[in-house]
Amino acid sequence: MSLKVNNLSGGYGQLTVLRDISFTVPNGTLTALVGLNGSGKSTTINHIIGLLNPKQGTITLNDCLLTQQPIAYKAQIAYIPEQPVVYEELTLKEHLSLTMATYHLDEKIAWEQADKLLKIFRLEDKLNWFPTHFSKGMRQKVMIVMAFITDAKLFIIDEPFLGLDVIAVNDLLTLIDERKKQGVAFLLTTHVLHTIEKHADQFVYLKDGQVAAQGKMVDFTSLVPELTVGEG
Amino acid sequence: MKLTHLFKYRFNNRWQIYFKYLRYVFNDHAVLALFFLLGAAGLAYQSLWQTAVINLWTQTILIFIILLTLIIFKEPANFTKPADATALLGDEKSFRHMVKQATYYSMLINGVVEGGLILILWPMLFRLFTHSILILIYLTFLLIFLKILLTYGIVRRNIRFENQNNSRLINWRRLISAEENHQFVVLSFYNLFIDVPGITPKVKRQKWANLLIKYWPEKKELPLTKLFVTAFIRSYGYD
Image (cartoon, rainbow over all chains, first blue to last red; front, top):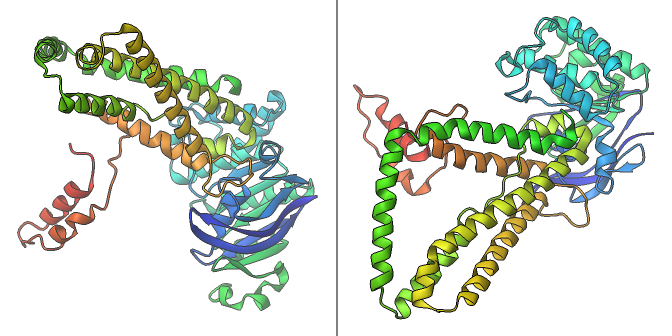
């Protein structure tokens, strides 16, 4: 069981950005979705989380077809956007409560998990603060905590490392590795390849809205030499 | 907060904010001025009603005004927020339920407003078209029904993608964008009376002014003048 993207074409309005994209994100793996600016990474993500309607092709998650069973499909996903978006009127505690309500989590267990995550990301003394007043990095951490208290089967993370401090980056990668062992699938977009290469199992390289290369992470350098200029 | 009560929560929140700002709109001076304005408007309307010539021109103007009532107050509220696309992803059922309730609310409000506007026009309708109360009542209900239908149609348009086909996805981005526009219009009104936080002026290219901006004289001693002129032309909000 996994995320399957088959022959996906789509875009914004009349503009077709993605052309015939196919890839799979198996359970228990981390797939890095890479590409230059404007290659279609965020557009692909927006299709996978159902914010855009595919013009052609299908997207299924554990046999749930997105366009026909959107409610059941989305209930399995946690999404961490590139730009953290929070509610102005809710405190950090209320954000977490909202997430627990959204994903129908057991509050006792969820709060235990939340407390652990808040300590990891050094937010434990900010429960009554308003995340809208946090720095970008701190809001990013709020998004991460909100996602990781869920029991989602698929995590979609858009450029998670921008704005995060080094310790938080390592903590996030540790969390990802732990969840992978529990069978959770991760799809992650990033430009910071050297951070992810030891943790990703496979990659999908997008170029001009098409899959230009995909394969195991160990083959990345040989398959996509143009993206490893200046790395390591 | 239970997500099944999301609409109620947001509705209460929204109207708390509106009531807070209404205090500044209906301050003492404004209330006094409003009384005078309403009195003057009532007198003018009475005079118009008594003296309006019954001919094709006046009837056409009245029909035009009636059609205008269908165009104003037609945008529905859906109470979504930008963070919903992320935070409520896992429970789209509750999100859809909230949008449904917001749609009913908008249909009701817009219908009531339409009814109120037509009631105001009743005297002119009575003078220029018909003396039958029954026909006026039918017309009023017809227009209310049309406004409700129009509101519902706009919601349906906002929910669907251009390439919907038989997909069951709803267009969250469009819904959220529509709500942001709706809120901008409402809060801009309050912003005339008091600074409303979070109102960011919208920017539009205004192609007609491109040449004016391009050839606006730049002076060394006033380097920011051109910038201010450009902002003035392209921005909707002026402080």
